[in-house]
Image (cartoon, rainbow, N blue to C red; front, side):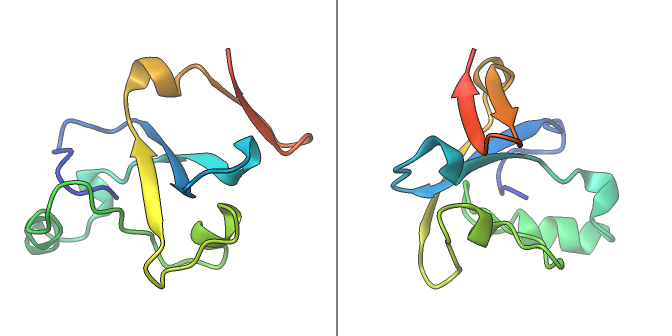
Length: 101
């Protein structure tokens, strides 16, 4: 979830730890929508943070280690949500490579 994008944005985002030194250090993830946030209060709480804060979900396979062995101890992350750019990113899981058309 990225704060400040609003209810209307439900697309994919490109995420990487900053600085990104290799193409494989980035990934494309889906932005969580309003229907995935349990309550209106929680949605309001998340949007009370400054614009651009990346909030990673708690899960068995967390996203930060997939991005250049990142963690949450103060690492900086880059998020790109422009559909025209993100839609041209090629992901090849077999080659562990991300490229651009």
